[in-house]
Image (tube, rainbow, N blue to C red):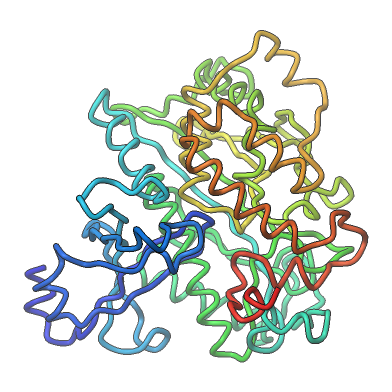
Length: 437
C-alpha cells in the first residue's frame, strides 16, 4: 500500500474475484479511494449468478496483496495494476461460494500443519477465431472462422496466429509468468502457451490472467480467443491439463527412483483416490454442455478412468520426470473449469479422498467418464463425497447453475455444435441472450 501511495504513475487498481462457475469479475478503483477504503469494499452479490440472493445481496471484498500484478500499458491501458480479492460475508467471515478463499484457507492450513506445499502447472489450450465477439455472435452465423488451418507447430512467422501467440507470450512475461514454450496446437487456429509451475493458488490465479490476457490481445487484432472445450465438431478440442505435485522441506514427495514410473507410494495413492472419485467430480472438471463434446475418444480425449504413462486417452498420466519434475497430470480438465474449484477438488481428493479396496485393478481396467452433462449433474448432486468436500449448499447451487444451462440446450449432443451450447455457456457473457430465454 505504501508503494501504491508513493508511485505517482499508478492511477487505478483493478480488483478481481471469481464467481462459482469460474467467470472472473473486475472492479476498477481509483487508487486514492482504494487506499482509504481497502478495509471496506462492498459489491452487490445478487448480481453475480450463483452468489447471494437479493435479500442478502451485500458482500465484501478483501484484497490479497500477495497477488499483485503489473498490467502492460499497451494492452490494458496506462497507470493500472491488478490484484485478486476474496469474497467475504457482511460480518467478515469467508463466503461459502468463493472457491479462491477456500483453496487459500486449505493450502495455508496444510502448510502451517506440516510444511506441505502444493505445486501446479497448467497447459491451457484455446482457439483464435476471426472477428471480435465471435462467441457472442455465434447464434447469428452458427460457425467460427479459423485464422489458420495449419495445425500442430505449423504457423509461419508473422501470420495472424503466430503474431497473436508472440504478443500474448510477451504480455505473459511482462506480468511475471515464467514462459516456457508456446506454439500452434493440433487443431486449426488452436494455440497453447506454457508457463512454469508454481504454488497452487498462484497457479489458479494465473489461469484466470492467462485467459484474460489472451482475450485482450485477441481483441486488439480483431479476433476472439475462445476457451470453449470443443467449439468446432470434427477436430480436436481444448483441454487444461493440470500437473500437480506435493513437496515438504524442499523435497518432491511424488518422486521415488524405485517406484513404478518413478512415482512414490504417496503419488500412486494420490492417483488412486482421484480415480476412485472420478465420476463424482466429473462436473467440477467438465462444467459445461460443450465440455462433453471434448470427451470423445476419436480425438485423443482423456475420457478413460485409468492412469497411464503413455496412453493419452487416460484421465491421469504420469509424465516422464526426475527428482524435481515428477508429477501427476490430470488430463480430463476442460479449459472452462473454475480453476480454484479444480485445484481444491483434485488436491484434497488426491490427498484425503475416499479410496476403494480394488484400486489396483482400477488402474488397469477401462471405465469411462460421463458422456453428457445431464448424467454428470445427477452423479454430482447425489455424491455424499462432493457434499463433504464443497458443502451441500455449494453442491446444490453449482448443480442448479449447470442444470439451467443444460435445460437451454438439446439433451443429445449430436454431431454439430448447437448455438445454445455456445450462447448459454458460462464464459460467454451475453446477458441479453440469457435473459431472453
